[in-house]
Length: 446
Image (cartoon, rainbow, N blue to C red; front, side, top):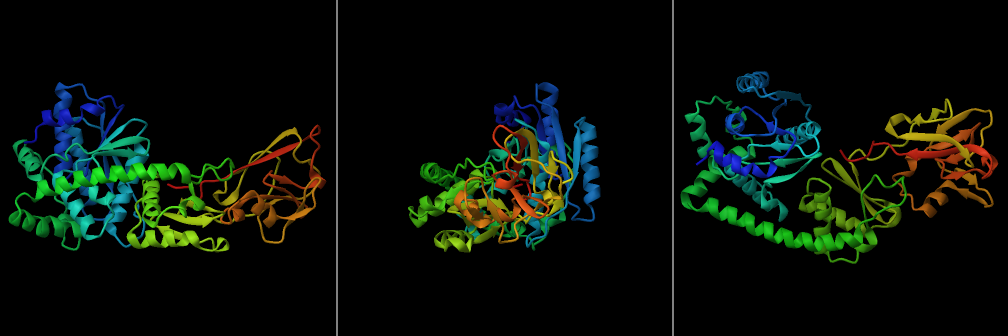
């Protein structure tokens, strides 16, 4: 039986959080959580509670739902944030709406804050069945975690121990009003079919099915824990920790280590790594494509896009990037020596006065990017092509078009401060300008 006191016991471990954020749709589940927290706040010392309603704009009644949430929060003296979101185009409206919600939540919660979501036991079982029929991996069969990291805070689902009918009984006793989303009865949505057609039949024929599915989740969690232990050992060997500041923003695995593992351990490590990075798991076909590319020719530099990220094999590494990848830089004039924000979100070119570096001379200074065929005469060394310098330094092909080049009157002066032309080099004891490139966030993960 659900009671606010029982809920309070479930929340004891996060009582020291600076803020409890409550995901409020206005439906039965979140209204129960809102009312229970309001009642507890009168008798218990709770962190500040702030509700969040995500306005997807998908339904003609969406504005009315937001108004309902606002009215209910005013009645209980609980602040409310209404977040309007734009859905990314894709095949599944359900998935796009879910992603938008979690991005909205993550943008609000601060360090050590807790986001409370009102998923209950029926939601957990629906999730398990949905993933089962999709042929999900083992981790997916562990269901929704009771808690996990979200943004800089923590997500917690305190109602997973109660069935929906228990929450509904309590809500009716309290005289609560809630929204009935028509989508919950729309057979076009997979979860609706599971909720109204599949799960009731399973319960009718196998009354203990809830307990059986929960035991399955427990067994899967134990098996996943063992696989994670093995993956953590493999990850310790395969993780690429770059000392190059140009490459540090992008997580990577070393392909040479991956190729020493069996196919099963490669797949296990890949999924473990992506989970650690907060990425959605690839499906079976996508995982196969990624692992098949590990042995591809080095100059092929294959890229596999998965959801909102992509995996790129280059320079002996498997790189994790935003699905947008990294675009070639946009040429621009160098207006003044100092810090220059690069066009196209390509970061900042920092120039500071110091001993050494490059010397200034009057001329037409430009920031450009690789076109092919560039050559540089380094101090005390023969001419080198830019391609050769990149290869020797292990700069992957996907990053090279974004590396800013400094020109004076059409002559290549510096490659982002890493390599400087001999003709423009200031002696170590001479005043000059030191250059440093700080890559932009255009291909970093959201």
